[in-house]
Amino acid sequence: MAQARLGIIGGSGLYEMEGLTRVEQVDVTTPFGQPSDAITMGKLGGVGVAFLPRHGRGHRILPTELPVKANIWALKSLGVEFILSISAVGSLREEIRPRDLVIPDQLIDRTRSRASTFFGRGIVAHVVFADPFCPVLSETLYHSAVGTGATAHSGGTYVCMEGPQFSTRAESHMYRSWGASIIGMTALPEAKLAREAEICYATLACATDYDCWHEAHESVTIEMVLNNLLANVAAAKDVVRRVATRLPKQRECGCAIALKDAIITDHKLIPAQVKQELSLLIGKYVK
Image (cartoon, rainbow, N blue to C red; front, side, top):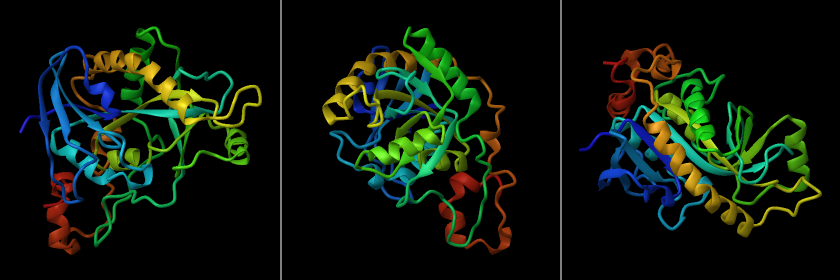
């Protein structure tokens, strides 16, 4: 099976990209079921890339229903070391205007109904998650975004809500009072599972609206979100091309060894079936 170093999770429009060669569709089966859709593999600037449509082609899957464990596992099984997540967000700050790009560095988890770990069933692991986005990949992503000429913001806190409904005005004002910068529905549990899988993860957040807090702007509508997201597709493609050719040759960040001291369970007590199912993740630490 083909291998990739960079995984892209986002909308299907990203995959129709100039410069993508040796394109093939790959179906991956995981211990956690099927991913959101088939994965598009190819070469971009000589780098192996794997594109996964987060919500499935045709946008069929709710944020809460996303098979995130299968998605992250599938990318890991293809050799992916870096994941670039591309998603639409609402802005909670005046200076982050619709169609701006944001590379957040922090997360607030407001989800309620999502499985957020590969572990359990007889094995316990506690990974460090103080900095939820890979700082090295995020810096590369920011400089790549600036290089496209787009307005890009480095840093900021992403509130991940459950959805699928948008915020109430009271919630929007509350998140602003917390100092949050943007709000979306997809960064979690992706970021947590990517860390457990020892994959570097960063988000290119495309601001589509001012949520519903801004009195001088109309509240968010689906039409507004789609129009502004489509306007950002060209910039996002350019960012992806730049990131692919700027990845570090070797990973020296903590993401690459996130599980090294995180598995607390006595290795002799881990159920054999669980050990086998998680071998892709824990095999180098648990024999």
